[in-house]
Image 1 (cartoon, rainbow over the protein chains, first blue to last red):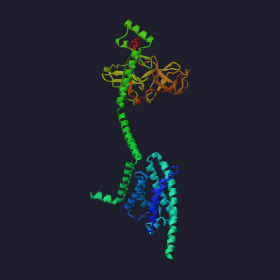
Image 2: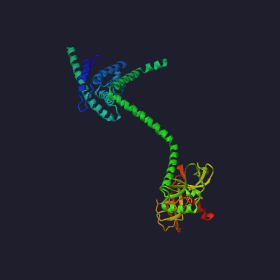
Image 3: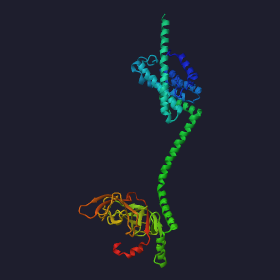
Image 4: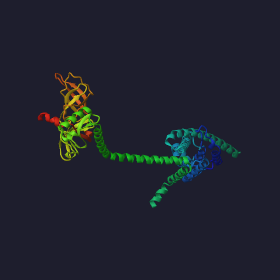
Length: 175
Length: 293
């Protein structure tokens, strides 16, 4: 669990509040990168504790967004659903070997359904709560999918980057 | 209590999930005016829908009473209208002369026109069908009005401008009506296009259909042609709807068609009716030999 890039998490939340909140391109592109942090948190943590962390992060984003509690609700939902979702998407063999897989350890096909699915649900729920009317549900799903693609791309880049950092660190330790 | 605590402990993560989501929802609805107004709208819509449904049910319950009132009102308005407009001039003249000569009974002096048909009447009253026998060869209806309300035998029973039957006998509070669907009932019907009179009888099979007898084959008639009451009848005023032609059969060698007629009155749904008597009915019937009535 110490392998999590904790500094990166703090940086992402900081970036969400200071930079990504201000991106509202075409009224569609509004990526929620803090969801990466929630996704990357260890599965081995107590679920109640995870949910409280999710609530705290969501609340923090909400207070900077002036959006009441919709981020808190979506984040708590993500943290609650994550342990169920991982059983659906990641192979049971892998989960037996390592019940708390880091995102970097999961093979790419499982990662797409695991991270992509959770991000899509989180984003869609968030935009639906934001619009809060049935008629806007299709547009919420559309915005959710677009932003999920963006955030997934960023997540993929971060995974590659931290992997290269780790391997460099390992090499330094070896010598 | 212990059971509840155990249950809560078992589902503690779900409980916490619900709690946190509720806090989030509360924060949203108390903090953001847009969400608050949407919630208000939603509540109003739900409450409005509920009230509307309740209202529809209660309105439906009250429909029965409403219909009685409407039927009374319609008859009252028709009477009022006829009192104002009076009969048309020629008939008025005739009645006035008869009045001067003293040949009219007191009842017949108060004649009036039934609106939108131009029929001269001396009695009209609303009534409701309280019994309607349909399964027999000789059916009859019961009305909730009797001699106390002025109903007498040989009055016509209408549903709007459709003929339902004629009063056969009355008690103080009820009247027995012979409908068109009675095998011994024979009504003279006019085919307005050709001005031909034939008789309408019921064959005792279906309460929607009757048969038109004695319609000669040299006179053109089409499916869908309407049939109205003729002026030959002393009971029914002329021009009221009886039905329309549904099927025409040509019988080889016969001089008349076999015509099936859809009756205008649907006896399965007969409820509110009007009882009327054409003016000068008794005077007219006095002249006819008794066995013809």
